[in-house]
Length: 279
Image 1 (tube, rainbow, N blue to C red):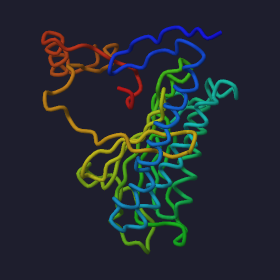
Image 2 (tube, helix red, strand yellow):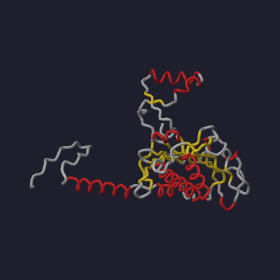
Image 3 (tube, one colour):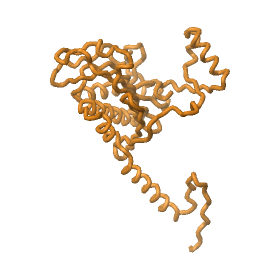
Image 4 (tube, rainbow, N blue to C red):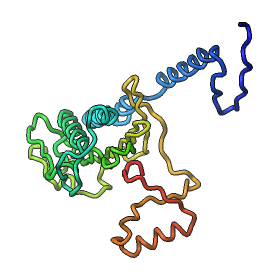
């Protein structure tokens, strides 16, 4: 038939649904072209690490180990249902929380990735009772890393976003000796890098070296984190939202109670997920 339905009009910021079979190839072509352009023009996290570590090869190796751990964790979380990875592992971690199966997997991924980078001397994980001290002088470096391999894992069964959190310190003790907890029990002002990865509708990695905060999103098709934006506080202050678990209200001190009460009286909305990264 030579008859074709009329094309539906669309606004300047919207994409119309295909109105006939003839539209589908064209829309697919436009989408593929846009995706290809973005993949070719966007800076990858690997490129950012090489450029932004200012020639510090050891820091570059560390950050590449971090992004590798995030990719492996994202893959495990995506397959959690079909691979029967939901539920408890029957253990309790160092903070008294029940350990999920994915907690153990994520912890193993992070510990192994950081160890194999060859630039870490001490690791502190929420899932480990004691710090992990790397004693082999040929397989250690100047960095101490604290991390929660899978924060908010209690939300996994509900298909709610979870994440990984990390911070990095440069050791103070002599490199010829084993690192000690004094190398990492230090003020946040001495932290040289930090960030988080969020596993949700998309997998994102947000990092900083102390000069700007940068956001990347994982393109699973090519296995690369692509640059999204430099994160900044909105000049107008942004949305008025407070986030806390009010189920613990009775255990708060009075200043905390007063602050939350003032938020409620000043037009703030409540939004609480239960995963610190998401919140």
